[in-house]
Image (cartoon, rainbow, N blue to C red):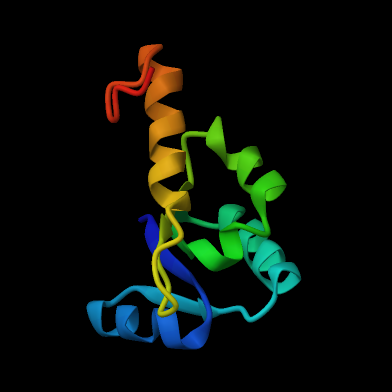
Length: 106
């Protein structure tokens, strides 16, 4: 059975444990990259990652863009939304559809 993980700073991910998700605090990008690799090698279908950490792990995240599992989904942290999550969704949609159907930017 697949599981769901949340990786990020403790304050941002603490509430997800109440929903039954497994939380993995990571305070540095190195720690988050290591945790992401470990979780990807296990039975995790979805890994939520805070945008703050993701901004420092772009090369690491690129590794998972083409794979079916795990789906790495960016979430805002307690410091707010950086817009990186929506940009990754936009990029994936453009790749799948061939054009920008979300923002219709020219």
